[in-house]
Length: 108
Image (cartoon, rainbow, N blue to C red; front, side, top):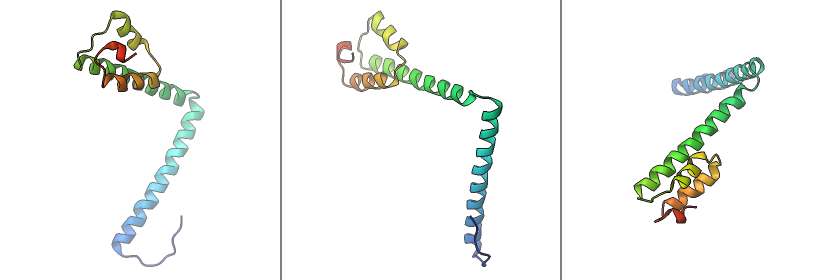
């Protein structure tokens, strides 16, 4: 992005410089990302897998806390089923059901 060399008010000049700095920072970040990906193939996928695992674990924890707060009693098998679940969409469905559930049967 280029601007014609016209005099700008100080606040407009500051805004322009901020926008240009952001653009350059974005380009620099893209170059760094490309270099990292070239040096460490698969790293991005590993990071994303860890992030997804964190999302799943967060939903497991939320579901168990919600059921405990609502005083819904779980069997050992149901607790294990929740703890071993890796499907974040299924966990979300269970969380939504648990918000209204009176029994574990209302969740699963």
